[in-house]
Length: 323
Image (cartoon, rainbow, N blue to C red; front, side, top):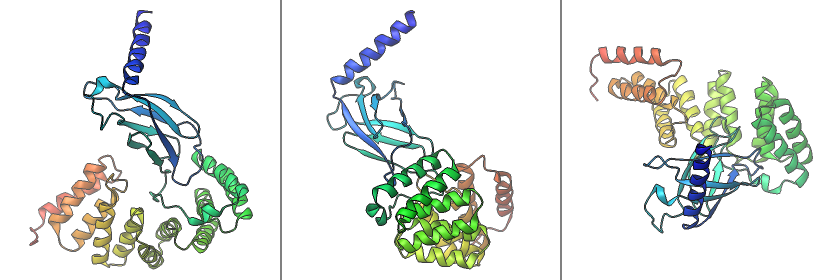
């Protein structure tokens, strides 16, 4: 009973103290504008005093977040009074480590092949019925209900045949069910509906690589690179993979380096592995060792960790490169 009372007093004190700083609002949205499938879990980070930086008062279904910073976690500063570093967790979406600020909009990206957040302009013209079906499909995808998602996306494109995002996600639903011919057809329809929408290029390239069609993967990613897809590091990675397999080492190195530059959170750790492999093939042992070690640092529990360590040892035993 005493513990419960203390916790209650603590919560009241936190709320009361924070109110003195003011109550702030932020908003959480999804990358494609679909409704949140469920209420996100928001975990405030701890201060140096091991106290939560803020109190999350409410999280509404439309994504609005009401929070109160805690003055005990840091000295008061009017310029940072609304700052609240948090981790946001939502099923079907990537873990987001972000900072809430008053009026901020936090965009959650769906779990997948690191597609980026570019939205097809055709989505802005989608009729309400198509949009509702699409939103239901996205919700089903977040729960990995692939057949249900397929049905909803098929409804969306039946109502609005130029709905590029729906075609793209329909392809994903097909792929997850191992319907690769249907997946390719859906991706191609997305590409045709909106040639400037980058996501289908990534999806088609991934499929081509999986099927060993390196020239097709190189052609697809080459076309995508003309669109300057800086939010899609996966495009550069797939271009590097295809180039390496076709023994175009300079192109592979360039694209692997661009992948790493555009991926500060290391969501594509294999880019470091690939760059190390490319540099080894070019005779740059020092550079190869550096990037293979970086790969192990980022992904120490990778299934090929032992193999990579052996490769590093082999490179270290070799003659020093002249670079």
